[in-house]
Image 1 (spheres, helix red, strand yellow):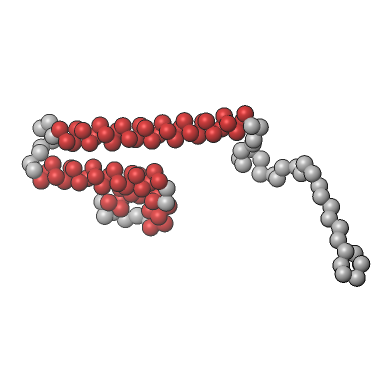
Image 2: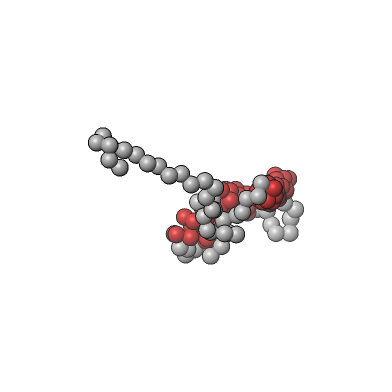
Length: 123
């Protein structure tokens, strides 16, 4: 199940795997999605209770909220993409390899040999 599906199932009282929900809520994006969906469902319930029909124009508050939610989603996705890309560029400029490129440890640049003597002068 995707993050959206498991959170939606949770809010709709539908069956879901608790491990999937825990994994979805472990990320900042999952928690933000939960907050957005709860707020959106709260607005929908208020509008239905007030007698707002499907053919009527939504109230100003609902339109403003939808625009604000869309702006937050676009800003979050854009910020993530820009940060991810700038991190890759910075790593390439520094000559760093990503973990996915090579799982082998880097070659040592210096080897140190330590010698010691105990109290009796032995090695």
